[in-house]
Length: 308
Ligand code: HSE
Image (cartoon, rainbow, N blue to C red; front, side, top):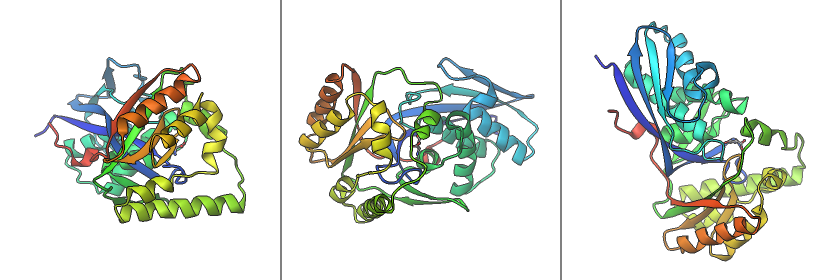
């Protein structure tokens, strides 16, 4: 009988511009690793990283709690978390831990849950950091590739991304507020103009078409968001310059990664990815902000990874 299992889950970028809370893309920039071990009782969290160790406040802890309850599992669980995804930077950090945990729990107890159920449990962990459940990052982290999240009922559609799609991510070295996602969700308008909704809907639809047609140019030039990006960009020093520089250097489209403050540029294998990355660094430097840049490609999800 299995008593211990380790699963890795990738970072992810949510929204891709106009697909707020609906689109997600798993990216191989960073990974979290979660090891679940059966114990006598209770839920304990072991980590060397700066994450809450009270299971009620930890995404992985909440996932285990909810899955234990749902499947009436009496065993205790030790959750060992190794963070690779920087927390609070819009790279789906809490989602990666939650996704790895849901997939590990499923394998540890032989539950054989389908993709939607795994995403639902992983999403229940997101409450710990975002204050509300949203499935874009967890869906990408669990299933990999590009995902479209339909809710009520939850139904995630996965599309394999084009093989030649590449991204440059710039992660600024900033102090991020605690509960950053909650804070950055607070600045989004509650009501929007019909004309803005039409613009975003047309671009979002074109992004889906771009993924279906394996067309990075169509994906990139449809990454345009007139609703959420304008409301959030003031939270990212130098954002306008980072975006402008990346586009000048040949990026196909640029936007905030998830709730930020990372900025993501979409490109393809034939683009000059180093040039785009350094152009983004210069953009942040113009606002006296250092950043880490990562060139990445779409990733498989936690579900596709071999357990050990
Ligand atoms: N869709 C979410 C948001 C992603 O933008 O708030 C959070 O990572």
